[in-house]
Length: 375
Ligand SMILES: Cc1cc2nc3c(=O)[nH]c(=O)nc-3n(C[C@H](O)[C@H](O)[C@H](O)COP(=O)(O)OP(=O)(O)OC[C@H]3O[C@@H](n4cnc5c(N)ncnc54)[C@H](O)[C@@H]3O)c2cc1C
Image (cartoon, rainbow, N blue to C red; front, side, top):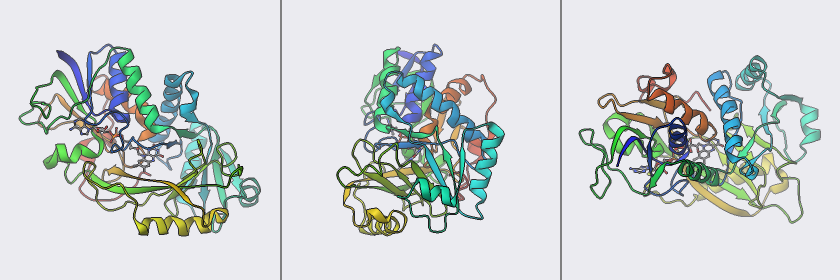
């Protein structure tokens, strides 16, 4: 069969792209090597935060806002795939990122509450404030149940006519797109939404422009009947001064905590997904200070995932410089999940030339240095 578009990769970016293209009338084939939301994919975790706050970067605030609406529309009756926990930013006295976020919220009319130190301590006694002097609560933000949410998008895409196949595609040679069993995939356009695999598929072009880092996530068990860490009582919180974030206890998995600093290089196919002793010690040390009530709490679950980082954290959504029917979509850089719907919408328009390209997503802006600016 000959398709208008073949989308390779059914992570959050590819699944939403296929869905949006089909909604726009295209015939679409969606392929994934391991399946939507699989354990190796960056979209494969239990949960991902969706927040509007992005410092001065209005572009991502707007995309997150648009995406939240589209996620909720997709879930419809399945409201349980979005948990409105609220997201709390923990800020210091001198805190340019949080101050810029607050200014963006005011400019764009985003709902937020500014909380001074005493108010924070009163409302969230589970969190020990240390150097935190104020905070900002996004009451409408929350958590997407990631793996199931991606599967829901892929399922919905199939329901409206997207064909899906579980196949791996080899590195394109002379612009030909083939499965590992040698079959040619025929389409007018190809979208490679392969997340952390993009540098392997396009080594010369992206080998040094997207760097894949190992990231560890730890869940801590709470005492029976202790609701202080539950969604609805404790919001998600972000402490970007220490590059740490936490999610409340959702579905009994425990409090989720992760260090957002980039870890060592990682191979998404062959990497072992077992957390390190040093990583565990680091989160234990952090939790003893920030959440003393959970000092010594048991680890109930761990995960190893990967970020696929561009030089500064901006997404990569651009045409391949040699093959004009091949598009590259990725560079989620540890913050992409929430934006799946807006990315899918953008890709479905840009590949038909229906909108002006966003310069920040261009290949030309992707350097081979690591200077993270978007968090
Ligand atoms: C620990 C962790 C926490 C995060 N927290 C957040 C958060 O709170 N909020 C947020 O917004 N974002 C967060 N992110 C970032 C977000 O999860 C990613 O940016 C996003 O999931 C990337 O999606 P993707 O579709 O680009 O890639 P992926 O989800 O990796 O999808 C790529 C897909 O391509 C397939 N594929 C690869 N190669 C081939 C091939 N050759 N042939 C066929 N298929 C192929 C893979 O199987 C995979 O399914 C987090 C990431 C991690 C790792």
